Length: 152
Image (cartoon, rainbow, N blue to C red):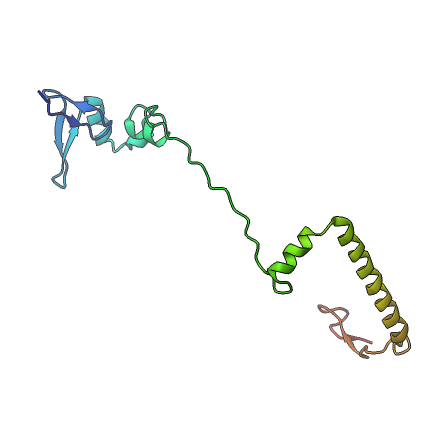
């Protein structure tokens, strides 16, 4: 035989027949309260989640030992090779398969070439550079400076 039980609105404990009281709220909603303590706290408008002995507090603070959930395992991220703007996928794979010594030798050669190119441009560019060239006569000072004028 199944016994019809109610749940206390405050503590969420079971209320068996012959126990508890039915409280009708001002809006007409019936509220079952299991004990005088629950009735008193409801009239004081206490929140069940702030009362340590209520089920609402236990649920909020994860105190129920029955709900043991298995931790979800995250998916492993898979690496996907994609073509970059400057190089196709085949070029990237070819470079990855090369020996590191070969690649370092290539890098050194490229650096030497770049340095030589920079040296030649510096030599040819020195004649055209004159001190003060490209500067304006009046330069505005940041902020107000002295009396808010321009620097000569």
